[in-house]
Length: 234
Image 1 (cartoon, one colour):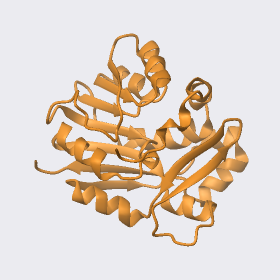
Image 2: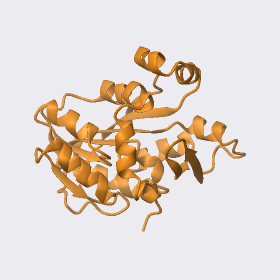
Image 3: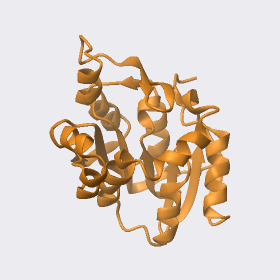
């Protein structure tokens, strides 16, 4: 089984859900960047891989997509089901395991927001994304910026893939993996993907209004990275 730390949210999903919709780091930083790289999803078959409390699933549905949403955490699955009200297929699934519910070439888009850093080995999920995506389909994901984790935790070896433990204010301890940009690029290429766009987000004006100190920090220091990759031939 591929090592992952997604179970950091066990027992905390509902608390996290109460904050994530309005957190400036999500609402005014990560989500605007991801949405800016999202292709037209009207009538597109989209896999929301790591749906959390369902913000992206709801957004995709509101923009005409046919959505399958999955998450490892049963509470997140329940929250997404309640949010989308049977407009989407919502399943509990582990990204470190084969996505047996999905047929080859089923999806036009795989969206994976702020999930991949919980996985130690990216190759198994990326190969499954390659399998379930149509040729020339889009993989769009956000994750921690490699420079951020390396700098924030003052790590000695930038090129290592290693487990980190963070203590989030008003939430508790969370563990995840950091990796260099080279590892991200190599894993995508070896799994059949070509990077089309890479975005280092800037905070929006709304972020500045609600959190000026955070705005000043993110304006000069990368926090997340957003990558849009194209699925190659099968």
